Image (cartoon, rainbow, N blue to C red):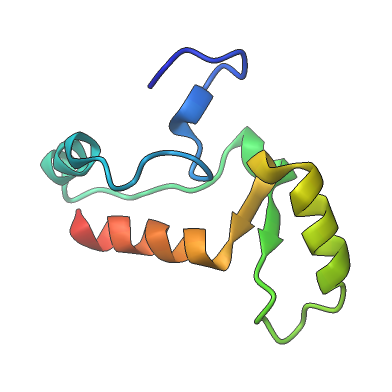
Length: 88
């Protein structure tokens, strides 16, 4: 991943290229493994899953995600993470 002022750069589940063939192949070579989603950055993640039945402040979540997109995990992105895990 390219260097970044954020230390981990593009290695976050929010913005890592989960379609990258090299990443998929590398992950396959580690199989079987546990894919851990978390760590220090997880403390600031905004889960933007508006279809969840218990979400009461959809507008507030959308606003927060527009202000800090690097901290916003969408349903679509979560589906991409699950797809990546299935490929590996």
